[in-house]
Image (tube, rainbow, N blue to C red; front, side, top):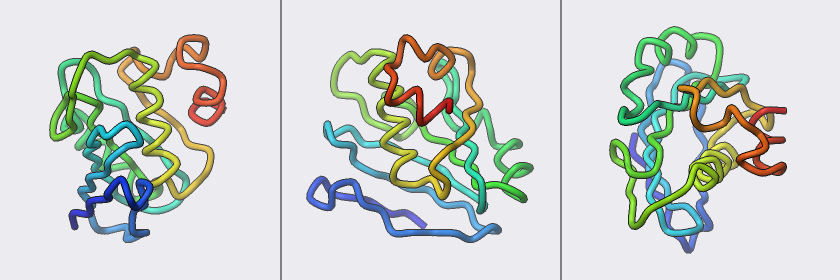
Length: 136
């Protein structure tokens, strides 16, 4: 199922929760960047963040395994996979992108992030609001 949100829809997405289906979503963030997301499962949310220069496919085995008990979200970070990039960006912007995705797609407010050791591992580098939601 592919869903696309428009800026006019304020990044809104249709709700979904089907443990056996994999959903590929596209959403447009507040700054106009297109975010590609693969999600599967239901329940407490796990977000798997890929490393450079990879995309969501590095987590396919984990997506299949953990989606049996959790909602698993594998976003493609800005400039990778099917996500867009218009100009240079910072790690703080990548963290903000993850927060936008979490706020629109995650079934649970608090999430567990699994990363490749370069996005959400240093709360001081991504700001307190984002760090609180991603890491708290």
